[in-house]
Image (cartoon, rainbow over the protein chains, first blue to last red):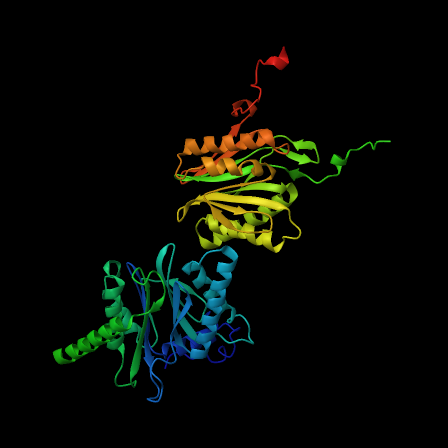
Length: 250
Length: 226
């Protein structure tokens, strides 16, 4: 497949001769193999979307949530190992609560992302811990406007206009780059995200999937919430039609 | 026989004090007297009881001089780090919350009545009172110290929202002067600090610049000098 770091990949506290830490790269592979997660920052808010691959028909729809609320005005969508992701969400919630308690106001999204990144990085410094096999996309709305960040297993936080992680990320990024995000409202963003996720889903390789979306925007009163059911239905329908149109055009 | 050294040589430095802060149309004005006492001895007749916490947030101190100095030093330190980490100036609310946290968690050790006031771009001018015990209360105007008792009635009647800068400053100076006239533990000069989006301005009103009230003798030539 890709590179193998023979001998230098046994511990996260070992560098390879060309300056790489292979354990972190392997952790990132766990993220790359999971369902696609997208975030876009529109002019009035942030939209998050997840391609939740369903492993069994027996799973209850709506269970195994991939998008979590951190506090009123920030949410987090996860890719990679679910249990690792759960740990990161718990930590983010604690950090946000502590900040509010100590400083008297909601944690700025930049600060929240830095703290989550700091925590992820911590687990790459000790041989008796393994890195998190999980990346997160944080979408939030604070005093400085809507913001979007990703945090990967190496413990780095990047701020984005549009971001994608998981197996369909390359195709998703291409589609996101075509969007004119600075002019879009979140309503339009919801449609676009749904369309992209349906587009990058590989029917051949993966079985069915469930689309999970959330937003935090002016329309939601700057609170992070799941997309209202009727809007979600509309987005799914439009995305499905768009897929059929593409097939017909072929 | 009387002892050589009076009780005042060993008493703790207290700021009898009158302090206040008001919101006006565009910012805040903080005001204070300048008397620090140890017992009945005036240890400092020109103290500065308005302390800077950040570029845009100031603190009025009353109660124990030592306690309030230590609290303000800690809060200045935390806010400095916080500003660097956040990448923008701290809000008045954050500064006030930190002051409150110290005051509340150490309530059994401290005797500190403080007023936090300043300007930030999110909330404009804000005034927060942190009295003994560590309550945090946002108010359009606040007053504290021993002299404040004489001001409550006056302020209830005379304060109006959205005053202009000059109006508000005159209001603060008049209030402090009224308290100085009646409270023995307040005196000296009146210092004011104005904080708004354009920055900070300090003012100083010596005794002869203060308004006179009922039966107060004007400075300069008067019957006492004859």
